Amino acid sequence: MFTGLIREMAEVLSFKSNVLTLKAKYEPKIGDSISINGACLTVVRVASGTFSVELSPESQKILAMENYKGKVHMEPAMMMGDRFEGHIVQGHVDCLGTVKSIKKNGNSTDFIISLPKEYSKYIIPKGSVSIDGVSLTVNEVMEDSFRLTIIPHTVENTLFKTYKIGSKVNLETDMFARYIYNMFKTDKKSDDLTWGQVDKMMASY
Image (cartoon, rainbow, N blue to C red; front, side):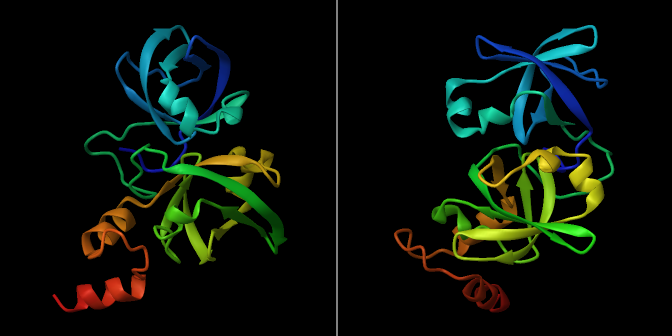
């Protein structure tokens, strides 16, 4: 489990034979879970100042592999007793999002991210979402996209400063949104359950 707060920007040294090798100040142990651009991966090798994680073919199909070069977001798994900030992030990427729009908005920047329609039901106004492992708040939800408002500190210290229109990102929807939606969904063949209906159902208990 992770929080979506990036520990540091690690540097990709190589990606060969499904093994990604990174340079970082953080020193994990073999077998540790670590989030790289929002994907939970297992440390398989450790050397002085570097460590390696292995990506299965299935993971490579799901992830925005074009972002696994240069600098990447890195967050170790939470430990019992750690201060909890951000939101609960599992490191299980649901789908790829696409940057549709980048617009300055006063002292912040609005990013509009599109996603496959089947996942849009898990995006909630003022809810949480993870973009390449960064915990963020959803400000506005459209039919197949949503708007994020990012402060300068976050832009300058993450991959957000490198994103352009058309950039692909790893996207993980909020775990609780997924669970609640499926818990209250009565017709498994129907996708027309709204969050207003969920609120009414919860209020009746």
